Length: 432
Ligand SMILES: NC(=O)c1ccc[n+]([C@@H]2O[C@H](COP(=O)([O-])OP(=O)(O)OC[C@H]3O[C@@H](n4cnc5c(N)ncnc54)[C@H](O)[C@@H]3O)[C@@H](O)[C@H]2O)c1
Image (cartoon, rainbow, N blue to C red):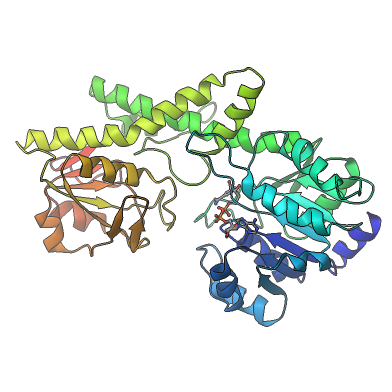
């Protein structure tokens, strides 16, 4: 292990990143930027081609940095796992979605691990970054990799380090977001610590892979539960005819013991709606029901329907129905200033409106087309004529590029799920 740490410190260790998506590509570029020779392995040939062409498909990765890294030979990409043989450190950043039943789907981790096992050699460090349930690294990866005949902590190192990136966040990037590391043995932790210390300002070791796995699930369950709480507060305020946003802003003046969360159209993205289910699934195997997660999931999943009800009420007040109404959804990405529509509540809202007979269009400068199993829509241009012609505009995603004042002045009716139109007058605006 000392030899590997030495190579890492000299930056002569060869680094591999399996999965070049939202998580893997920024990490690969970061290691390349500080001088490592990095190989990205992705089963998607399109992503590999784009990396090799220096064309960034992840908002947080600068095209210039990517191009320079590829041009200088510090970053390569391939779909061929044979590249693993030359690598000293390998980080696994593959997807961990849910199955339709909301059970974890760790098949991508298993596929990557099987490839690593075939080529594992003494001295290598393997780090799992994908979000997963506690026990994945020591109960599943460890025995699988040890089938190679090599022993963890003796022949090779194995650790878990959760990815905490927040797409679109300009203040906290890969470099300055502290990173948690937990190894199977202290020497595994030391090796992984040495690696990540090269690119991340603050690395925090914990006592085990299971603790590191749980840290990530605590963080994202904390968000899911607090968002559900504030969504329910918004529904209560609605009944009480109190302005939720005013209440939250006032509560947020308390300098201790309160952290503001804001209501919205529902959870989206690859993490918050998904990760807590990894934890509740694991607990179910131990005969324990994760009650907060269950309740938060119910409340958050109901928000798109609550928004549709708000639209129905608003149209009703104008003696109109959802059926045949022209409705424009503004913003379909799961959050502001990203182009990612995974789990976006906009999809549920659009489907529900279509099922009720509305004529739905959407406009999102970051998402030109929306294709799901049963939807195929193209973003429309946001024009004065369009705003004047639709019966209702629903603000689902508050991208900073939208000219709010201009929109508020031209739309007939707006249901604002993000308080984007704060201060633009209540006449034609219904807030959550
Ligand atoms: N996106 C985020 O903001 C974020 C934040 C924190 C944690 N995470 C976690 O990080 C992990 C990765 O998420 P992501 O958003 O980067 O996913 P992603 O879908 O953007 O990227 C995953 C990549 O892995 C590739 N891949 C799939 N199977 C593979 C295999 N067997 N071998 C090689 N490549 C393979 C895919 O082609 C894809 O390019 C997930 O566990 C996710 O929960 C994501």
